[in-house]
Image (cartoon, rainbow, N blue to C red; front, side, top):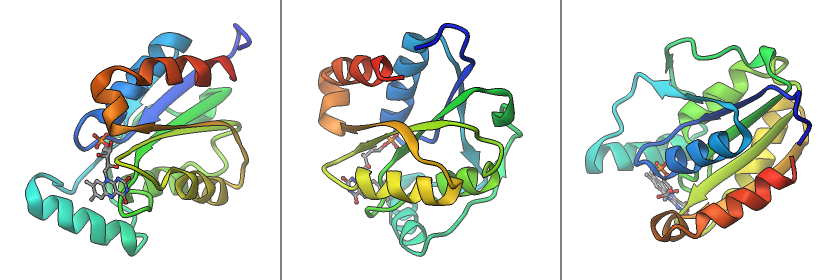
Amino acid sequence: MKSRMKILVVFYSRSGNTRKTGQEIAKTLRADADEIMEKEDRGGLLGYMKGGMDALSNKKSELVGGGKDASEYDLVIIGTPVWAARLPPPVRAYADANRGKVKKFAAFCTCGGSGGKQNFKEMERILGLGAQATLEVYEREVKSGAYAEKVAGFCGKL
Ligand SMILES: Cc1cc2nc3c(=O)[nH]c(=O)nc-3n(C[C@H](O)[C@H](O)[C@H](O)COP(=O)(O)O)c2cc1C
């Protein structure tokens, strides 16, 4: 990593896994961190089910709060959970709103078992950029702590 690089780690998290991973990445890279917030309440079983359906129909959420200005950073690292093998609506909305503002990006996801690669491709398509590096972390690795080693490897590529 070039020491002068200004880095933003931005993530959405419904149940904490992507937040935990994002915070570890930000700490490792001494980067700014920012959470993507949306209007929709995704709590409970109903929130889970609607979330899956919204992701499947490629919905974009209404975001809350301005957040940090992505155009002020040399590198933006976007973190997302995998929902029904798709991007969650708030992450789709964030990527869409920041096309042209993000100059360089890397991406990470957390998931139960699979779907990360499709999400990385979709982010690349929306942003019109290739990812510098990607990282797929499994939920069980967040719980066990094994994610830390993967995070270190990912950060080392940037
Ligand atoms: C609506 C919904 C759909 C999901 N679909 C998938 C999936 O298709 N594949 C998968 O591996 N995990 C899936 N998961 C599990 C999440 O990706 C996983 O728990 C992730 O770590 C959650 O991140 P978070 O704690 O930051 O919200 C889904 C979770 C939710 C809430």
